[in-house]
Amino acid sequence: MFKRFIPTLLLMAFLLPQQHVYAEENNIYYNKDYQYTITFPSDWYIFSTEMEQSLSPDVRENSPAMFTKEDGSSQMYIRHLSSNNNKFSLYTNLINYVEKTPKEKQKLNKVLDPISIELGRTIKSYNIDELNETVELQMIQMSSAFGEIHTTIFWKEFKGTLIELEFYHFENNEELFQEATTINNSFTISPSALSSNIKEGKMDFLNNKLLSNVGKDDTFFTKVVDVVEKPAVWMSGLGVILLLIIFRIIYKLI
Image (cartoon, rainbow, N blue to C red; front, side):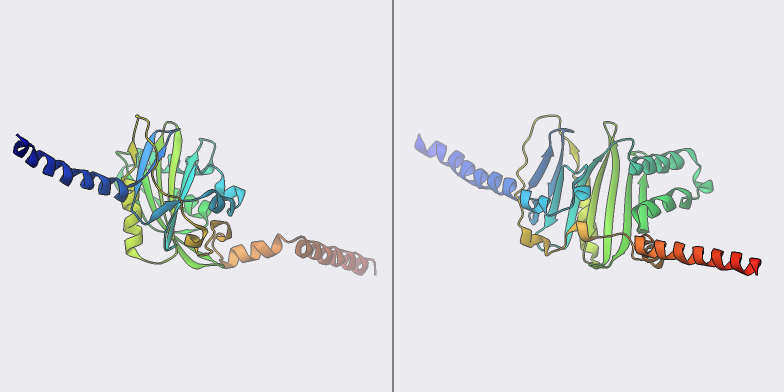
């Protein structure tokens, strides 16, 4: 009698470890407000409270969760953007233009250039899926703090909200770009209540690469704007102009 159950017991002993490994290898983030899941590789972690508090309020704004690779080479930020957000408008304009304009007549610079200006980055490549109304942007920017930074942005509209997945790559590595695409493709609508099992990271994982320190492109134009915006500079400029006006008046009187 007992011998009949030996194959069954062996099968159960084989399957149970497999299920355990599967759960450990899949780091799942579940957003209960919008009911979707995103699956991350095993070396990705969600920001701890300490890590979140190291960021400026404007970076944390509209972001329900942030993630990082253990080696600090990439970070990812989820953002839920409402219809009055500039990015939502740029996304809508881009999708509408592609859907309504025949391909032979499309001049995508009309809708891509405003995105580049708004984000302060150069667009290297893009992929627009008209059917699913999703956008992928490969971009690059220069940061005085970290040098050249590559970013991958994914936009999709869901429940009247623009879901943005923004990846910051601190290395120019094609594998990191492909990994970002894989993570984005794991986005799944999950109506049933689930729980996240992705582990919290540590401050050391960030390698002092805080997004709060990543500015827009350090181009000549932006540097000039930064200087001009300083009160001492434009007050001095107004003083010089005023002196020139006074001298001109005196010259005419003489």
